[in-house]
Image (cartoon, rainbow, N blue to C red):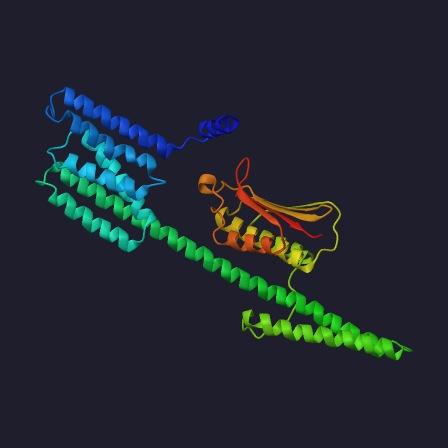
Length: 370
């Protein structure tokens, strides 16, 4: 009983509008058929009209679980009903149902399946009887629904490919930057070990051997790292160099101000030394968020906040622009959000983006450092 009550509360809070629309469409078709038969149409076939209208509309209720079956039943019932003569009141309901189910099929199936559906639909419609206005309306609605559904599916596939490509490129970029960060520190270890061994007077032989082993291990580790990750480096001819951290955040904010973006910086908590990967991630998040703000909310004030907690760094960038259209997460950030999410995931953090309360767009990241 408790589970049933929870499910009813969920449906009441978030109604399934397509389900409600399908039921309303079926009831509208039945009502129209009833009114039409009572008015003198299909006097000898009132029962057939009721059944065909019912089977042409109500199957849409099961579009999520049995789409193909619902499409077959709807199509056959629609063809029988529409081919019987000139348009009738219930014709509008069944044509809408037919167009809807064809749209869903085209959106969720492959392109060649959509093409076969279109050819079969045209042939069945034209061969179902004399070509009358109802047939032409059904044909136009069906072909239009197939075309729109197929275009929607192709658009979704293109977006997925672009997002996947952006994720791969960002991962490669992250690997290159981490390569530089880690290699820089490992090479520093090797240099310090060799320096300590050579410049410390009176060092025992055993201590010198251990420092020499530390230096050699560091050099071996750097060689293996370059062998594994070096293929991801861009061939720019540059040497390994430490990647930017929060010590260069001031330069980044000043550059944004020079380009016309008013930036306010807020620091909360006591700054502590962070791992290079966390600092690099925080820097890149602020950099990408400022770029997005300049692109989608030019001239709008931006607030950059850093909060140091006991176990994490909280980064928030919020612009005071008009906000993304529709308030969606993907709006306003483009593929840059993909890169942010990849970086935050790399350090085991959490990212939230979207429309801010009171307008604008906000990027919030929690980067654990313990």
